[in-house]
Image 1 (cartoon, rainbow, N blue to C red):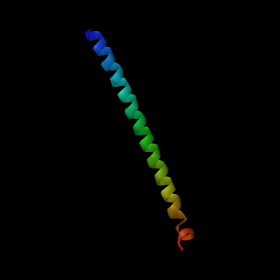
Image 2: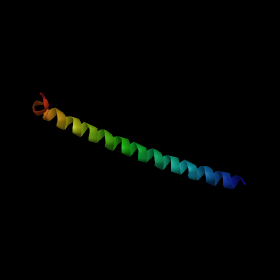
Image 3: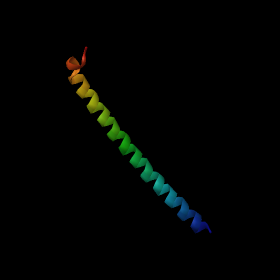
Image 4: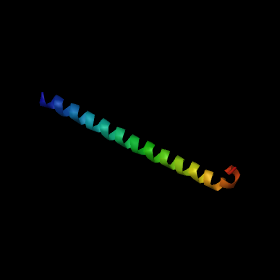
Length: 50
């Protein structure tokens, strides 16, 4: 019985770790895309002003 609980906790822990790493990678990539797009807007600021 204790081995079943241990194996379940182990698999849940591993899946949480993988999910956390995936969320961190997604957050970093979205942040980089936002910075790049902001830099593009700032570089073309004179074209965008009315």
